[in-house]
Length: 429
Ligand SMILES: NC(=O)c1ccc[n+]([C@@H]2O[C@H](COP(=O)([O-])OP(=O)(O)OC[C@H]3O[C@@H](n4cnc5c(N)ncnc54)[C@H](O)[C@@H]3O)[C@@H](O)[C@H]2O)c1
Image (cartoon, rainbow, N blue to C red; front, side):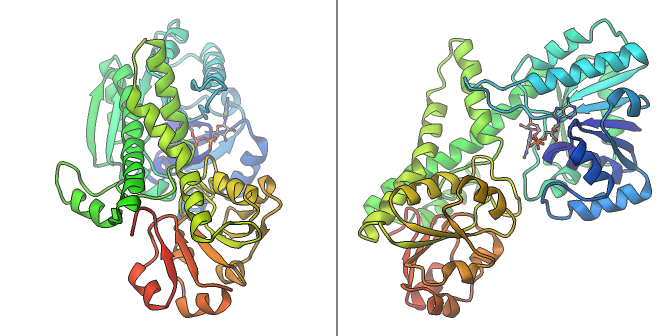
């Protein structure tokens, strides 16, 4: 099928590449001309495992191309995905200006070249947005509007796009469902066929629930630390219950990224507009906001103050295997450490440059061991493989003092203790 993907960020580029890998003819459209230039040279503007190699393959095969004008370059498309950002506005609601700008371009395209098309909203949008888009396109009887929320995880985006956990399609016409069936015929996943509003709500409810699990465990980790119990053992014991399951039970410094923070506040704002209270979600956000301060306070107590202490921070992106630093927990952690008078060095395999623009006072190292050299303590913020799998003898040798703060409960506790480190995890005795 002929497909256009509007917006070639984390979701759009991954969607475009995966559809091209499935044999569709795809054009990615972006207003950012620099990005388009780079993509045409088969260079991915984002770091995602396997994405650049796949991009190279499909561009060379001629199944994926890029452009910056929908009207001039995407007229052939029968399915047009909207994958633009829906960031948080000042008041917490989802900012839909990029989405409606894309819809305006779609209107112009349809006026200029009327034909049967499906407009598929993949961006995360509040309930009712798809219906608003349908209203804006109502004059074109041959256009269907579909909601198809995306559930990929950064760091494994391409794998998730090629093997999705489920395909959720919201539409109001059999022809629209049939088009989506044809588009995704090579994917094997459970399908949910429903209304646009239900599809939109499934996305917000999923993210809110995952964020709730994380904050639940983080809040519990504070009690666990006070009681001297081990939150990791507790999580394992809980996760073996099939009604609970093991995922998203790891205590740490909290969630970040471009989705959970903005989607939870957007859902709260929608609830507020409806006069409905979502108190649980308010507390989820509050725990997430305060978790880094709670942990830095613990560091302050253990180190008897942070003034002049050399702290090596390992990992800066919001999670491993991505360069995304949006709402990364490293940002409040760095702010708190610097504010407390610590001398901070930091390492991240791909995100150091972006963080350096925000925190130039930090010393950025080329590798983990350089970061750790002469440090009074190390703090794991993001569990990149090369921040977790360390040569512990070497770590001990280069550090001024063998003190480890494991903000992700990812270091091997028994091994580091055997090597003589003082170890402090999250919610562990
Ligand atoms: N990043 C994720 O992990 C993820 C996962 C699921 C859902 N989502 C949702 O998907 C949407 C996109 O997220 P993202 O992280 O890919 O965003 P992003 O910021 O990485 O990319 C958005 C892209 O859209 C482009 N753009 C903006 N207006 C445009 C227009 N009118 N025409 C063409 N291009 C335009 C921007 O230049 C940018 O390249 C959001 O709604 C987000 O909530 C994101």
